[in-house]
Length: 122
Image (tube, rainbow, N blue to C red; front, side, top):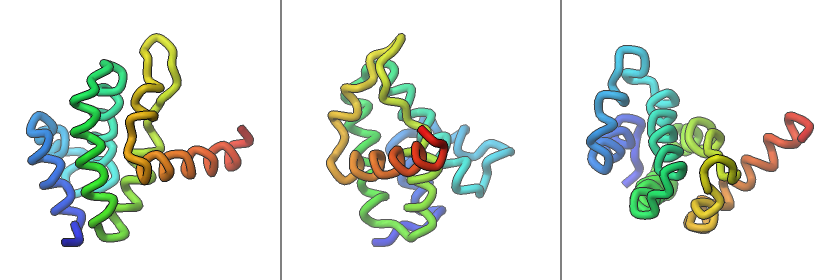
């Protein structure tokens, strides 16, 4: 199966029913990047909370989409999901989540991070 935009959102809804309202708010309805951004915000909250079980569920959902989606969904996962994740330890311990990522997801995040640092001179 190759997930289209709408099918990808349905998969996220099934995995995370609490996100349904956020995925279909007036501002984000039918806009893939903002909807994937909502999934990313949930992922960051899971990381910040140190929720290893929740992170495993997030990464499994991500990988299902990453490996089986149309190019538009993969682009949204790169730009609106991975790009916004923070794994730096600070007030919250976050580095554990980077280490717990499936290898293809970690590589994609690292490639995006390197690209963004070059782009922004960091």
